[in-house]
Length: 405
Image (cartoon, rainbow, N blue to C red; front, side, top):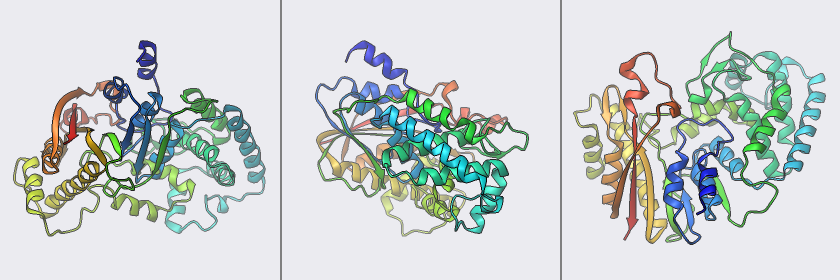
């Protein structure tokens, strides 16, 4: 690959805030030396870094995620865009929204005419009345766009006004770190005043403008434990699975999803079905998986519920690795980026879990690398209590490279 192209990739910036993104350099380093076009899969796509890099390097890529906002962000970042069509539609949406708001009453300022009581209370708690009016008008105008790609693009622009660190259009601070807390004194911006600016920001950072890229990127809702992908069809998997108990993405993503028509009940259902999510359930435990769960905690676990949380995570990741093995071609590689975490003072060795589960699937571990997480790139900032700080809990990631034999 040309040096200038590599430099450009290392400088790329995401189109939307996202906690704990995969480092661009990891995907770049693993894919840059490939001389032929590959089919790349990320079964837990997150913000889409692996897919963007793959497409930019000339590979076909496919990604899945259970989080609707992750899918939206990834699709937008990978999109072949027509700048002028997007700009034109964005202006039409803003004009239409300003017309809608004239006759709109505060009591009707909710994304859906049939919003449930719980979701309405959430919206009233986190959004001031004038912003509720403007967001309702914008969301209804975006909903009416027939062009799916442009609609997704504008939803992403809408969302990035909400999910911010400080100044945003809600009363929540630290949404971009997935640590929302209400602050009545926080700086509030107006949706109508910032919508076009948000659209322009994404256009500026888009890598695939005004021309059809020969490589394809397909991103869909899907579960890594049961992939809708053919056997032996993927050359390389590159993904960063969730760290047990590290980040609750939907905790902040729901602030956008409610405006896209999701209720809090629907979002909870998505969250409960995520990897490691069903924490209250008891299990008929697989003896080997249970031993791995006990092994990665390195000490006796305090409660049955605590044991079930870790066992469920191990069991889910076993399903993920089973699917990865199924879809990989012979000699295909799986590049898994994972870090350790801490629960109630007990260190959980997620990296060891992935190594052991890979062995259980008869995936050959051909290389291990260590990736230091720069302090300034941490998306969960350390709290004041140093004993519980993320700086003490997650300093490094491991890059585990498996091969299907």
